[in-house]
View 1 (cartoon, one colour):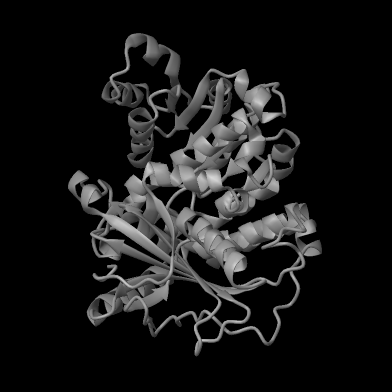
View 2 (tube, one colour; view 1 turned 90 degrees about the horizontal axis):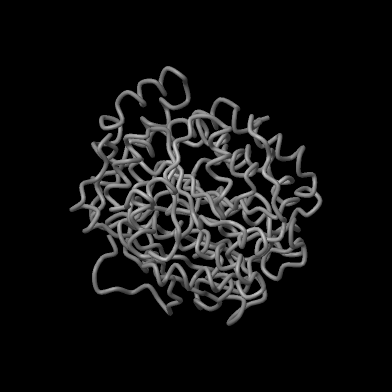
Length: 466
């Protein structure tokens, strides 16, 4: 277990009472990193009334961030925290309402930060898209977080908010308009003018694949089963045989084709599918009579895909080749070392230590297309379908700060008036779909920040979505 060496902070379990006694609204840990810096800039530019603090290991790099923000000496002194051990982390967090953890890979360095946030009695969000970290955190911290009314929210980023909250919104629309039950959900991510990313994401993916193939992920999931027997007790009923077999998921070798979007599709290798299913499981255990995901409701089929230009066969083949090489090498420790040493070579130049240039960040964008199918849907008649389009700017380093800031703002809103916000529960280790899927305030905050969630009749567009 991950233990803090610092004293545990005494604080009320009621969020409104706890938040009212703290002067720092949000503290960003990892504020000097590629993404963390952009999260801080977002807060400073769009939320100047919030009292924001920054935290990291390097005083010099934190000073550089403070200079970028044009903080005066008083602000630097009160809002810059150098923390190199658990005691210093807990002390830094103790005056904050919400911690945003932006330093990864999380399976290497995330648990001490989360331990400190819980000891400091803070709500917490991170950018983590690593399923093993989800499970380790859930097994170790969920009960403590519930007891103290603390929210721990993983994957508050492009990985996995558009998929999770797009799926929840599409299912809500389906049940409101067309059907009593959802038989299937399809998520198709598309990217526009995105050709590079920071290597930290690549390193996290390498470690994640190795964890899955080496048995580490299975061991973590065994701990979850032991710590949460209620997951078995609230397992969903068997899917009815007469439900339509939608959506279909492409195989590992042959891409699929989405006729409505005009795109070739392949299985998306990110954490989205794992996150969606984990949210369903957690929501079912916490709210057994939930209308969408209660213990009486069979789970929908789920397919999470990446969409590619339907006319560019070469691009699809290249992606498959690089994916095959990556997944093969990541099965062994020596192969992981090779991948970690050469992120550019094994990603066709996409992942670099510098990350994308500012010009690319300005040009980039994404659109995620989510379709929910009712239990009475038949392909021939096209009935009982609900569609949601999620869209926004460059996903990794522009949309991601937008998303985590919007969800953090929602938790701050809950600290002022919990009843008006409508979170699914007030404490626990969770993912965005379970906590925010029925929270209209969260969707409103994301739209205001610049990521759209639109219910649409169809996905027909004048231009190709990629």
